[in-house]
Length: 543
Image (cartoon, rainbow, N blue to C red):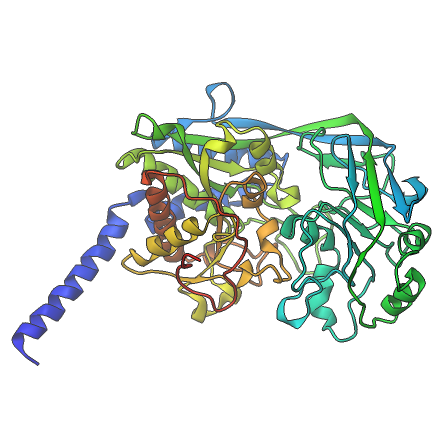
């Protein structure tokens, strides 16, 4: 090997080392030492697991605000403070909703509780008439293994399915987590206008997308959402309604029900000469109110025009509190410290906010939100998306980080891996910016899009705070390093956190956010849906 070549290799190695060093040294708020300091307090026993409505969560909020103030991040909450109060409402529902079914000119009306069950939270009053009705078999999308929606266009149609179990040809373990989310799949993924399902085996109505149902002396449902916003009807129909609905079809309901009960294959077809009119009519009484808080910080951008648009960053700072009952024999720890979930995201978000406040000012403004109540029902992000401190239409993208301090399943082979969800669904351009930002780092991470697949049974896209923004049309990216054996256990403690990995993820999020904040236009929203999945890599080309 020539001396010149040796010198060139040495120079390249020195350049790489210098770049890697500058990545950490240039952003001290994202260095492992800083992250460790903040997480040591936030995941300590003193905060008692940071449960929503607890003193521990209040201590965490105050601590985050202290770090923002010390780092030069401006308050973005109510009344010039760092806190946005979130009202969590317990609601009683008086539900007079009904559905009129017309088949070949014959009409029958089914009222809530009389042949049809509406969820207690049906949204705002509306009358919705639809004449495109599709029977989709079991209503399951399990990817290549089984998909009742393959080659089907159900957008703006009423979707009907049967079956409490998957067909015998399908692995029940694969189908089980998806069976109770079929309404969400049809409405949220595929754009259906309404859904109709049969009762479950226990005779109870299936739940709505929020997993709530039933009535008792307690509130019928708990929410932070506005109660007057129309939502797609999701109803559970009796045998009587379904028999009439299928009365003009070539295959009658009794035969379809028998096939579903026997877990046989079901046909899929359109219901002709059928029209459905949903009359959504519910009154809501607020019977309880509890308050919790988001923590919000803002760094103003430097461009006179673009500073009125925003890149939003988020993490949830709540966790599950502590075990209040008797401990198992020999157990002594009752506090769910949540070091990774989501102490890792919470801490990294502190570092990101301080980095933007203390570094070069990008063109756009940046907003940082520590969401409350994610572990219960994404309350903080839903509240913020409904009542944002800046216009929701001026948020060009939202980046959510949750559980970024460990390896998936604690495998060393996952040390360089980072799961990314949602980057391609609303904006192809946002996905490609993510790829470019990662590639620019001295040590790029290996981005894994497995859980972005719409058939993934975990349905992660709908289960963390980014979805509250996506539901408003904001392009989002959810980054996390995967589940592990300490998820939601008292063993999710700081001694198991990989601070170097946290730092690397923080640097990626900073670089991604910096590029978005300096982009001369908002990432184009093309709404092409999920295209990246298991084994997919790289950018998406123009089509």
